[in-house]
Amino acid sequence: MRLIVIFVLVFFAAAGLVVGALNAGLVDYDFAFAQVQLPKGAALLAALVLGWLLGGLTAWLGVSLRHRRRKKEAGKKQVHA
Image (cartoon, rainbow, N blue to C red):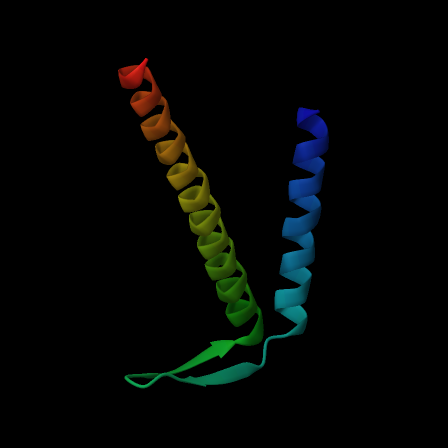
């Protein structure tokens, strides 16, 4: 299992390097407070990482809040019993 995970990680890392190398052109980003020029590969990687972090945070908050609610309800049931 560990070997398969290593192969998958190496494959995606190599694919990312190829995509980054083939898309070396610059892309302009204009935020309200700053203007940035990034290579297309770096912009794609930044968007991917940001999406991964926001998705993980959203999932963690959903699970965490559900867990707290169940813990609170279990505490109320225990007091009334």
